Image (cartoon, rainbow, N blue to C red; front, side):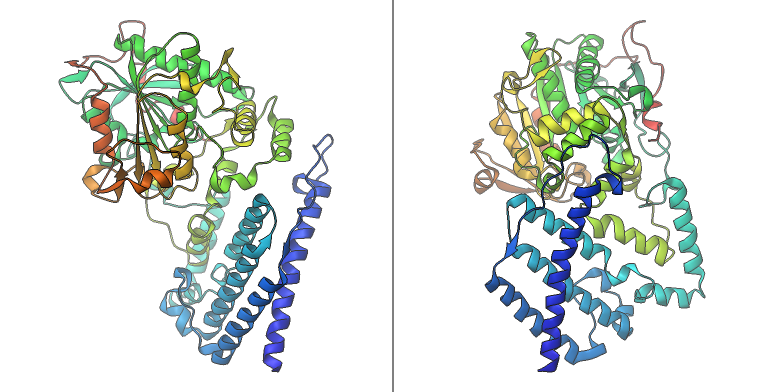
Length: 572
């Protein structure tokens, strides 16, 4: 009985600590704002959220905790952790203290998450509480601390302390680089062994370089293919290696390929706006592809934010009486921002007001801030995994092109970022015809007449599959929706030769209101969605004509430097 009472007391202390900690954190943030510094003119921060837990649910959680803790403590230090890959190695089972610490941690983390799930509050408060608990649980794992990490202790003993010295070297190196290393960055160089598809820069301005790629066939389709990648990342996610390059794949299929390579903003672009990115980048690139190729219409592709920019630009052009797109491909793109997944917890009126005050008239959002935000959406996989490996075990992460790209951050101009936050994530105006004015024109995505191929990834945590599917209810052209397995990047970069994953297609072409309804009539197909998309794209590409012998067009648009160009090589 004494043991059960002690367990109950421990549970009560956990409950009190969770409530008090959350309250104090919010009170501190409300009182001081940015990092503990009061900011003159800072917008009014939100009142403390109101939440409670029903007594019956609390009692149920307490009873469950008492039962599991009693079982754990009865087994004592002989209990090895189970069911979590952080504690899966033999070292955790053979080190009683570390193994017991891991087992207690897992019990406490499960219970705290159960409490967070039981909270009675509005949806956003509940989501924020769950996120806070997830971050605490990820950060407080015993695997993150050298004194409790059985693997790190064993490695230090086996290497006579060399692993600790190497870990300190890794830590100092990351401090100099300004970010946590996820791969051996010395193994890659843009233009040498990533972004190597042959091409040239044929135009540049202050916002972007336009790349044209060398044809790989004697003939190309008459309608060129223009890709707009996201400006919050670098374009070479579409051209990592020859075997997984979407750019090279499109080239091999006989398309004349153009790609926008965004400039990594510096102080000279601190006042750049959304309108400038639409007019002077997206629309400019569309007109360039038309002019250089001599084709009135072009095929277009937008990836993530690149898709949002592309459709906005095509809507502006439609308002001006232009329909330049023979087709539009949207990859993991949001046009309807009513379902933004986990990112919604960061967005509210006060946060957007703060960003507007901070950089709405000028400034830069550092690329590292964005990279850190996205990493902490999956803290165990993309943060603490590397903290443990790099610093506690003294390991050098293996070369991995995708993680090298992930670490190659880009800045964003403040005014562009502030406009994007308010008008899409916060107020969700882009989908409403006439609600926004961009480049002097009322935006109506329904005015885009081109057929559209819409792709969403099933496990995407940045653009949820429901959000990607919602574009089918906004755009008016003939639409095809395809769902791929995996996440935001791995689902997209899935070349056919790898024979990985699968995709879903609804052969009857019906597009009901929601993605779950669509899925009920869809059929799973093994392998990449690229082949389905390629066949669709060719049907909109026109006849084949002799491939151009030179880049650009005449003396007006000439090759000025080899692809991938210098813009993509600039660091944040």
